[in-house]
Image (cartoon, rainbow, N blue to C red; front, side):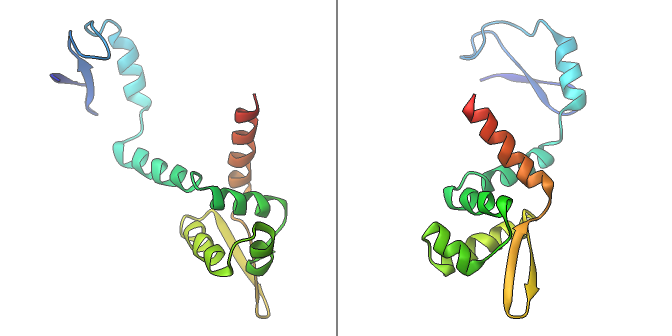
Length: 131
C-alpha cells in the first residue's frame, strides 16, 4: 500500500486502489482538525494498555465487586470462586495500573477502586452494552 504523510503527526492519506477507500482525500480540513486533537502514538499505546486491563473477565469481576464495597483477598476469592493466589495476581496488575488501592487493618488488606473514574468506566461500559 502506498501512503503519503499528511501533517506533522503522521496522518496518512490513502491512495486510489487501496482496499479501504478508492478515492483521494477530499476533506483535508477534517484531517487537519482531527490531527490537531489526536493524542500521540505513545499516549494511545498507554490507553490501549489501560483498556486491555478491562479486557479480562476476572479483572472486570474483581473491579465490579470493588465498585460495590471494599474487600479483602479472601472475600474476593470466595465471592468469585477463584483461588487467593489468582486474585492476588490480578490485584497486583490492577494496583500497578492504579486501578485499585488498598489499606491495611492489622494483618488484613482491604482493596477498593482507586477512584471514582474506574467505577465510572465500568458503569458507562455496562450502560453501553445494555443499549
